[in-house]
Length: 408
Image 1 (spheres, rainbow, N blue to C red):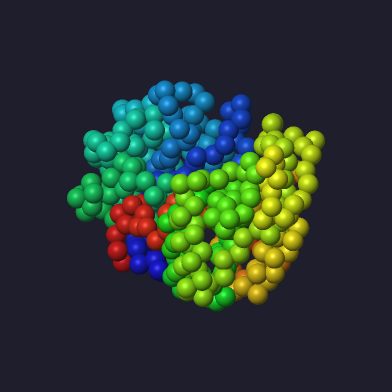
Image 2 (tube, rainbow, N blue to C red):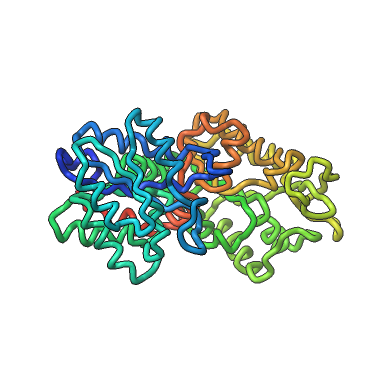
């Protein structure tokens, strides 16, 4: 699935007001940004629109915003960092209504090439709701054209992601995608729909339930499916193995049996851990370096032990499968990677991906965090900025933020 949507290269923004939905949902500690990956990812699109003489109006959500507007989830620190990165002032509008008088005034005073950043869209409340039409229209009233560059939010049909496009179109404006969206869709789309083979998919993380449709869809597409992390134990139990106190979803045992049967019928390899690193229980705190562990065979985990990482034989098995691959998609860690004693499985898989010639795509979320924290980020072909969005894409779902853009 290549991108057949209008991109920023297809629209003329000279002298026009362009609303850009970015993903500035960055981690903050004491008001300081601790990881600026998402800000850096947005720069090519913003710079292109500035260079082309557009009046660039940026919007984004940040955090969950449970109890209305609050200083801790303001986009003010993002405006400061953006100003530094762009080498020009980004006018931050601290308007909790997002599209109120202050925002209208700031936009009216813009000159070509100016940049305005609106306040956190979720301060408004209507961004996420089904009845966000009013908010969608107010956002559209500020602009002539719209660009969606927030892949991490593109699986949500929110006012600032998809709803706004209807009203931009009604006034004759264009709705396009930015460079980040284009890159995400081309990498993930080609990997799933038109992969260079052998195609290996690696799934990890805690729950089978989170990845039901992904497993099903990838078994149609890939040559080898590797399953590690907490979700592997439900598969191991489905094979009749003893899994001790390990995380298991008993309601998904039959599903796992069906998937193993499907793999066999379709001639696909489905690899599960052959050995497991176990402990008495989950580490508390999660990064406790003093947790006592041992490695046991995956078919006989002791009743009083919990599996928390894949063992050395499994890392070897999984790494071998990756070596001959031409395309690899990875979503979900192999164990409790936040703990130094339990990060080895995830690290070895990351190392195998770093050393292969294959196109390597990391599906956002915990996998992206793991790859970056372990120092392998620059060795991957593409690290997705959207965990939930990349998962839904791998499921084969249409993303509202992509569907809402104009076709070429």
